[in-house]
Image 1: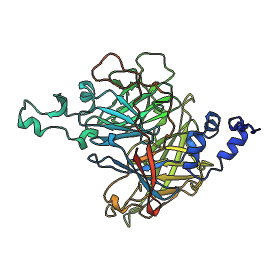
Image 2: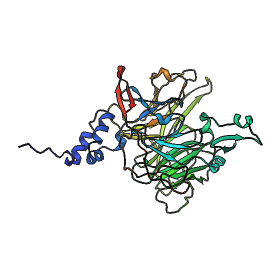
Image 3: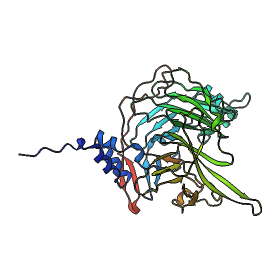
Image 4: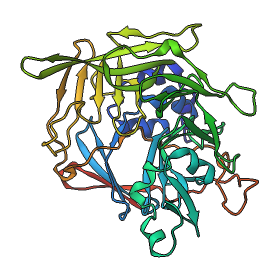
Length: 435
């Protein structure tokens, strides 16, 4: 008589967590989490090490990534990126925009797609000091009464879209997670931000941040969106717990950045807001300078939150982006060092050195080291930022796809595509192709 198969899903939580901590790579984490719900719960999403998203050609359908822990580059064949420019990387999803200022969320590892409302005249007016208008589905910059060839000459090109409309879009949660997903947009040059709820809103809603300078970045922390201007001033612009139909902004004057801290980046870690930057020391005699990487944190739940210096983050590893503001931390997995910051670009790189390099900072020592080039093919290009792969499909039908023909209701549907298949090539590189 055949013996019944063991019920692996009933293993003790402590044992599963112990096994999860010993997984050798992100690929092992993905396989472990895909087994069943208890195994997935035992290994948090944050445990999966991130990848560096490399620049891609909008005339191509190939997107490349670099895995720091395995020192390997690989590519995905993604037809949905053709004719689009990236304007964000959030919760494991890419945010893409085309020449019509239409926005698409794409999970590059599952092929799932979600449409967001396109930019409209209100967004265009708030985004830039230049007057943009839409003619026959395409956007143009107007200067007085122009028509014909003059109008065509002022057409907004694809590579200019981020500088006119959505500079960056950040999500509150993966759009297929089965809970509310809010998209918050940094506009090109504005003290306003724009937001929409996936599957709910058919247009973007503008919100005044009450900041004096243009918003430079947005961070989602403790169920709140924080707008941060170019001087480091912060305002709470949206709270998931708010009951008001139209949220209002609440500036936080106590959170002005420390004087002299340059190259500031912001991220959420263990429920607290963290700020990473460089404190520069200049030697006037030689016109040389040195800098020390520094971290500060605050608890937004405090009555008067303020920055406090952090000299040790324990078992965490921090990943900070220069191009996109999406930065995050996670418990160190195998091959990643603890108490370390991985910068997507050198903070103070040599302008004549066109090879792409990473900068790794030791938090305890405050010292940094620029690594050797890992991609000679990226001459003159900056990495877009870090992305943490989300390889697990969520609840089907939990989110809406924007329908341009309907301005009143979004259709609750997730558009899926064939999952990319992995192909191992020589030199250890991994290439993914759609099947």
